[in-house]
Image 1 (cartoon, rainbow, N blue to C red):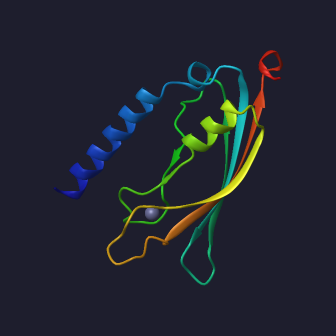
Image 2: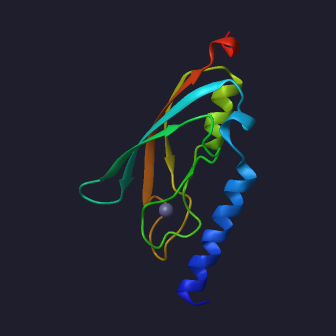
Length: 129
Ligand SMILES: [Zn+2]
């Protein structure tokens, strides 16, 4: 497939995934906001690639799959959805951890990229225990 078509297909899939995900207030009622802070690492001498903070509101799309920042990594990425779902289920406010990208790029190892994340969730008072 030509690179452009490939890109279009990828974007369409992404759009579909976002529609299926719905919005935060539908999927996780009782959340007032979620802050996701991520540090991206790659395999290099200076491993910190970038830092990123994402604010999630009740009106945001409930899609917490983050793209892998390494060019050429196709089916990779970091899916924080299970982490966030678990946190909310347990009514917890903070989680920290690391996640490796599972995508593969040619000869690169599966350890080509990872993130460390810090998630903090604010609940609406009426829903907190
Ligand atoms: Zn990757």
